[in-house]
Image 1 (cartoon, rainbow, N blue to C red):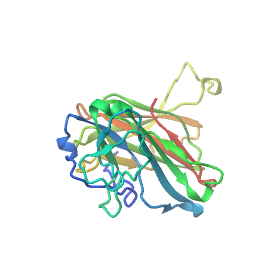
Image 2 (image 1 turned 90 degrees about the horizontal axis):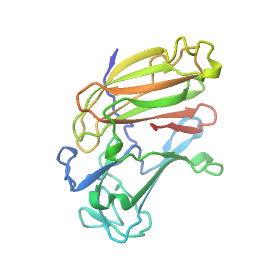
Image 3 (image 1 turned 45 degrees about the vertical axis):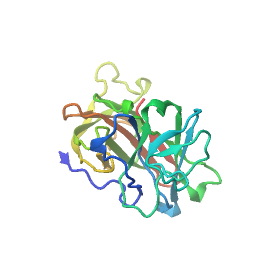
Image 4 (image 1 turned 180 degrees about the vertical axis):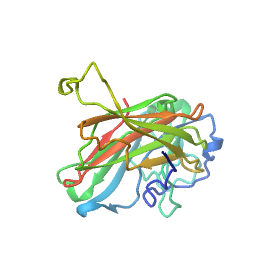
Length: 265
C-alpha cells in the first residue's frame, strides 16, 4: 500500500523565512541541524492539554557563530551571529508563513561549539513535568540505510505518530516502513524458531519542500494492532537512491497525555 505525504503539523511550526539560501542551495560553509517540531504559541490538545515547545540554543565557544534561521533579539545581520554565552533568544520569528519543520544553518567550522535543547511541554501539567526532550539531529545523523525504532508498545492506550525527514535539501523520495514483532526473548516461546516476524509494511513518499526538509507523518502503522505482540520494532528504509533520512516516533497516553519519544540509536 502506498501513501502520499500529508501536510505535516500544519499550523504548528512557524518559520522565519530570512534571507537564507533555500535548502537546495545550501552554502557548504554551513551545517544543517534539524528542528523537527517548533511552535511559537501554545496549541490545544486532547483532554485539556496545552502543548508548547521550548528551544534553547547556546554558543559554548569563545567566538560568535553565524546561524541562518536564528532571530537573536531582532538581529539585523544575516546570518545572525550567536554570541558566546548569550541567553536563549527566539529562534523563529512569529507571524511568518507556516513551515512543517526547519533546518538551522550553522557555521560549519564552529558548529561543534553550539548546543541545542528542544522540549515539548504540556503546560496543563507543568507543575509535575518539565516536558519531553526531542532530538535535534545534525546532517551527519541522517542515514542512507535502515533506521530502527525499537521497543514500541502496541497498546491502544497510546496515540502514535511516526515522523520521517529527508536530510537531502529539496530532494524527497520514497521509503518503506516495516513493523516487526519484538517481544523480549524471555516472553516469546518461539524465540529462536521464528524471530522478528514481519507484521506489516507500506511505502510512503517524502514530498520536497522549499524552506523545510521533505517530510511526512504516519498515524497508522501497518500491523501495529497484532494481538500477539506487546512490543514491536519499526524499521524505515529509503528506496530512492542516495536518500538519507532521520525519523522518530511519538507516543501520547490517552488518559495522562504523557509524551514519550522513541528515537534511533
